[in-house]
Length: 178
Image 1: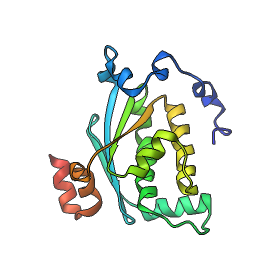
Image 2: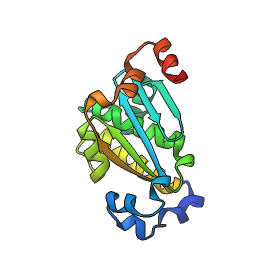
Image 3: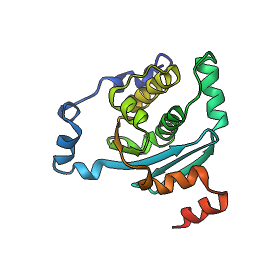
Image 4: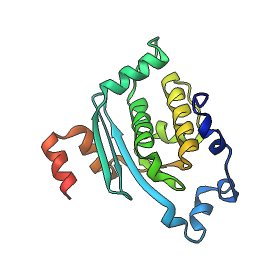
């Protein structure tokens, strides 16, 4: 993935003491909470939605162009596009769009899909679409110097991100005004 980005090669192997610590240990360090971005997201087969609560940014996008691009890259085959892949896709889309402002941060991605949380934790999947997205996510983390970790929660806590993927455009604009 990074073969065409030689100017980013030096950023791939940077790390320090904090990178060796568990998430709870990193968050307990002095000043660590100032370097955390809180992000949540949701996906349906038709729409993707993400909220960066720390930087007060959100997005709601049609999913089809992203599904088409992923199919073009990975191939069709016998693997169905499942909601979990869509929810991982919005994590990657957010990382691509917001990676530069996440530099030096730990990004806590809260979501209600346990498959996605597990894939983000172990960085492996038997689903080839998810495997490809995990490679892209890792490359984005390296080139933008941030770390994304998953934090799962119950679906009824994901109201805003759910609204971005399910409600009408007028409702989404109303959410944005708040």
